[in-house]
Image (tube, rainbow, N blue to C red; front, side, top):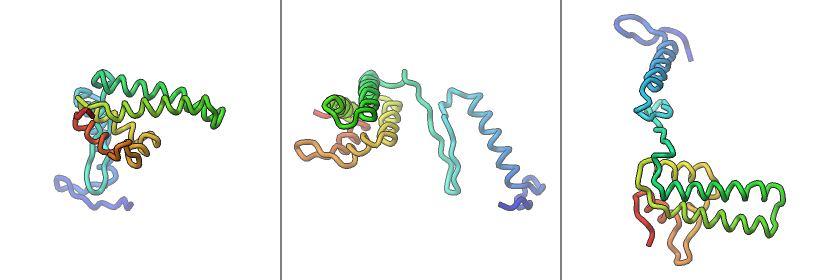
Length: 158
């Protein structure tokens, strides 16, 4: 990027990098001084500006929080076992418990926007959850992704 003056602000030439640095510091101060806006971070691309909201665990509904906590607990048991022992009966038992917790999590209906955020975040961060949503079907042929999307809309699976 060139540092030549190429912008005009109030009749004065402005270095674009210096102006962006100044705006970035100002935005950070605004976010820090207004936690009620719940902005976690802002991303700027040449095509737009996007903000990501932050949510507290206490914003989660009881059902989604319980399902997420159970899934995380089962993952915390499974992951060290498989890394240490490999494919054993104990690992298979832990895997099955984790998969059952994942199924409950995927089906749990969202009530709050924090629920939607938490479910989408786990789906994007956990390769196993993402794989189940994108590639698996239920025994009756329905796609797990449909179940997940319906849960984001607050619909409980019957």
